[in-house]
Length: 488
Ligand SMILES: NC(=O)C1=CN([C@@H]2O[C@H](COP(=O)(O)OP(=O)(O)OC[C@H]3O[C@@H](n4cnc5c(N)ncnc54)[C@H](OP(=O)(O)O)[C@@H]3O)[C@@H](O)[C@H]2O)C=CC1
Ligand SMILES: O=C(O)CCC(=O)C(=O)O
Image 1 (cartoon, rainbow, N blue to C red):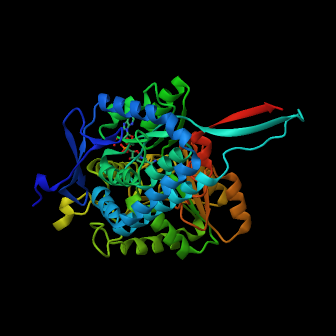
Image 2: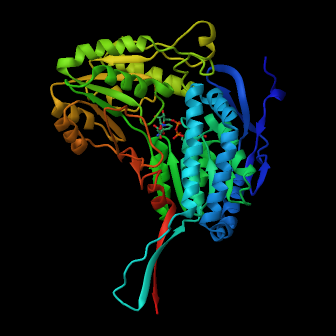
Image 3: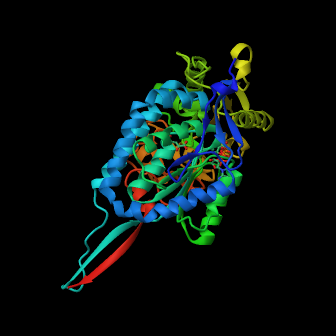
């Protein structure tokens, strides 16, 4: 039995110091695979704590900018090495805190290291262009400059990769940061921040604050000293971020989810398609904004595909992600678990045919966690709620299409446009798909999830707003351009 004294209390990091909240209250982060296990206690911060964090970032703005891009890059290299040294501990914490399996958590942490090294390299790359002036005696060039203080609000589903793909470019391009992680995964985030601190991040440059999104998250997005905000999470909060940022004319970047389709044409390699659909839909328990949630199959191969899909789903082992041999962990929280169960009930009520799963797992250790059997709905029609709203759980909606045109029409019939994939061996079909699909991430004969750190990431329609994240695209968001004209 765990005792309170065995569980660590994590502090905020403000103005180069690990500090308690003024509230003197904490919030517990629990293990969704063993709900009686507390992974850590976090500060229940107040608006006053947030004020200190923003003031600290504001104070550090000038010196961090003046340090120069190369030195900032060196610091990121150090942080990357420290995260690599602590990879096993960070990954295990992630699995305990939000349920993703340990191999996935290790993969994500290694990805965090790679992202940091990519942006560390930016320290030595150009930050402007020389442009010919119409005046032959003049020199004209652009210089990218930091925005200033950037707020970073992240979700719980990628507690290492998402914070790093926002914090690393923010820092290397010269911004100071106030980072508010999702409460569900804040212990993992604290361990990442510890690596930046050990790497020697200067005073005030990176501030870490935990607590309720509606209190400190809201105070952060409304803060007058904020110069930019990057957010990943729900559409509801995203809209609030946009409204607040637009009212003050500051830059904002939102990534808010998807309802990602996979099209399987009659000439596709069905085994490859099944493998990709299983991975895209059920890895991370379906809790990825790039997860596959609608599978649209041409009539000729529909039954064959369905049979193969059910067979493959039967082999999935569900359980505590720390245990060997487990392929899919629990939902990350009780609230996410309840959301998924609610959507499954909704699917049944609106007439979709439940052909696999659809229930929570019970008995033994399952009673201590938030486990759902991977679920497949057949006979889903495009207007159903389960075909329209983001479920963020291990649920597939199978849909039939008479031909490619109809499949693309169904695929586009959603407010989202993050990722989309097609399985086909016909070059004409794949070219048509590339042109006609409304998605920021277009994948051919590959699963819908799968983001590469060096390429732009983001979606169309309601999935994203603002410039893309990752790769070179991040520079667009985290900098502003000065055009300089020097007359000789
Ligand atoms: N695009 C994606 O990758 C993600 C999409 N989602 C979608 O959102 C749904 C709900 O998930 P949920 O975790 O509740 O998402 P939220 O949007 O509520 O949370 C995301 C982040 O925003 C913070 N936050 C919450 N309220 C505010 C606010 N008013 N102002 C500023 N920040 C705030 C949260 O803090 P705190 O944790 O303290 O509440 C968290 O850090 C999921 O079912 C899924 O559909 C969720 C996560 C990721
Ligand atoms: O698929 C990925 O690797 C990233 C997905 C993502 O950004 C998200 O789920 O929030």
